[in-house]
Amino acid sequence: MPGRRVFYLHNPSGDIGHAVHLLRLLAALEARGGRNLIFLRAPSVYPHKLLENYGEVRALPALPSAASGRALAAAVTRFRPTALVTEYFPFGRSECLPEILPALAAAARRGARLFASVPMPYFTAPAVALPSLLEACARYDKILVHSPGGADLPYMAKAVALERRVSAGAFLSVFEALRAKIVFTGYLLPPPARAGSKKDFILVTRGGGSTSDRLVEAAIGAARLTGRPFLIIAGPSTTPARLERFRRLAAASGGNAAVLFAFADMPGLMARAAACVSTAGGSVYEMLALRKKMVLAPYCGAKGREHSDQLARAWLARDLAGAELLLPADLTPEKIAAAVERALARPLKVSKKIKPSWFLGAQRSARELKGL
Image 1 (cartoon, rainbow, N blue to C red):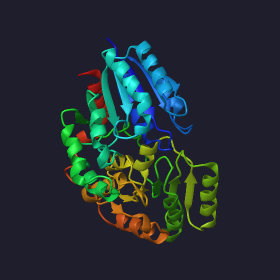
Image 2: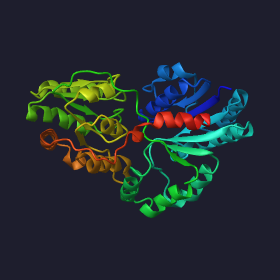
Image 3: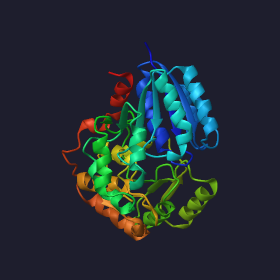
Image 4: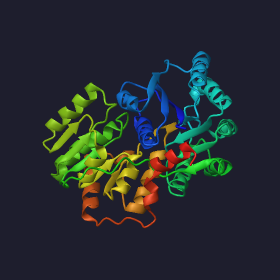
């Protein structure tokens, strides 16, 4: 019998990566049939229309509350799901607890299997909240972590200590405690990029565009210093005012930098670029799969609000594919230009540790959700 699945995505920030993961998972499930109900709390930059291709999308009220939890639980009961999937929660987004816990309970009463879909082996809970995190995880049948087993987890443990909220040992102890539930699926890679001739341009991208203005600004200056064409994708979270400012800087720089708001086929664009300059989100795995030369500038947050997940992925790409690494203080035109020239001058050497299975996360996740 085709499955009836509920998906829950609470992400009011401008980070579009979570929606991209959900879209790729839904696409992998489409061939297997079934019906999907998608609950979504996200800004207008999210691809609402694309999500509607895979099921009914219902917008959640502005803030999670006990009232929205009761309404969500009632809707889940009426839908009678065979599976309920939460995006990122319980590894993050703890503010949605009043809303999602009633929905999980309602789904469990209907006999549905409960899944968490987590983009990376990383959680936001401090050490004092680890018992609560494990308690929330205990409700789930499986936790699908969309990275290769044994790949970036050690890097995440090393990097998270820089946030000063949980030690590396305590961080790893959570994954050990959840070993029976966690499935490292591999990365949710999109379908193969369309064929196209390679070009002599440098691609610069910062994901959704909610962070890293300095990367864009410095890349504009680097285009002039290198004399190479730079194609800069500002990202769909970029405001019109910021996009206009970037374009004015590019026009005044005297270099060959073009700034686009967004681009539909980013993997295809990556495949054609001579090298990629990027923050170090999920696109790192796309660049690894495409065997690209990389210059990575991980977003590290701010003092007191450090983020280590992108730093961990940048370390991984540095060690396994020779990626150049630029820290926040390095985001100058001169240092970006020098890193690009070093990356282009060296032969690409990709570690044999990188296997095709690293990039089959969508297919494996779909099999898990179907119970195969």
